[in-house]
Length: 450
Image (cartoon, rainbow, N blue to C red; front, side):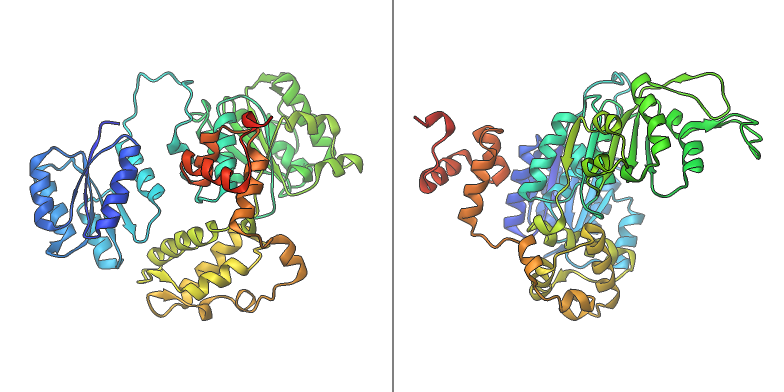
């Protein structure tokens, strides 16, 4: 990227860390701490856009936006604030600000916003040009090792035609991961169709999938395209695939093998090119053994398996997601909520989250509703979260190990799969720091072993 960004913020550590982060992603960055410094900096260079804090020590960041837009109406702007309010949001909207971010924010959010704002579609781009850039993955919120490992796998398989099976508990976000795979592939300009195999009876599900021609059955007074035909060239996400009726499984198998469909009542077939991403929270091999799922279909769908980790295994992501949902619902409900009490965070970290991300979102939404200050406190959480007792089952789900033990297990588990640099990146440390940890833990690199 060649875009030049001006960061205006009174917080020196934030200015430095955010500017360094954006420079790593190929932006040219200038900084200013005050309103006047920002005016001087903007006059010195032509900036593509500005990230400005509203609460500057010597002026209003929105006034600065107004000034620079009077000079260049096309300049792109992001405003940040520690004190979100309906008034400032409306002012930002009137000024046609491109994004409004509430502190504290994750830098990935800023980068995602920057890339979305500066993205310029190239009409000459070949439709099937591989697309595995970072921007496709920012809809996945989290910094845990488990999520980093999963995203690394997704980057490797996204731009292939291979079918994928997503395994994970209810509420872990399987459809979101399916959409990420689609958006990072050469199929992203085509349709993504999500189908819940458990939501409809067999006859209705079949007509939805395959479509029908006029006269196919009573009430079929017109031709209707099925979802598989609509998704031609794109991706079909089959959620709850373990609940698909056996009769329909046989027809789906023929679609995968022959790459063609036949609408209900039709005597002709139509060729289709579809990537299938399936998801389930069931043990499909057990379903196969019990005769509830076709073995041949299982192996057609299960070319690559990705395990979506439950929220309780994602550590610090719980806090990151909690803040994300807090900001989302505070803005939606027009409430001035800026932080989560440390005791509240501890309760969230201890709770096992059987409903995973979906449950966390619901809990934070309720907390925002009941919060009567700028902070979400323990009493704003649902009773079952506040008074959760750590059972033996919970302890199994949340193993209590030291950082050193975790690091050692992590290195031993993944050193045969990833390079030293990749391992360091996933741990969030430098390669030198990884070498020092190996030395301290008595873990020579595989190539160093005798």
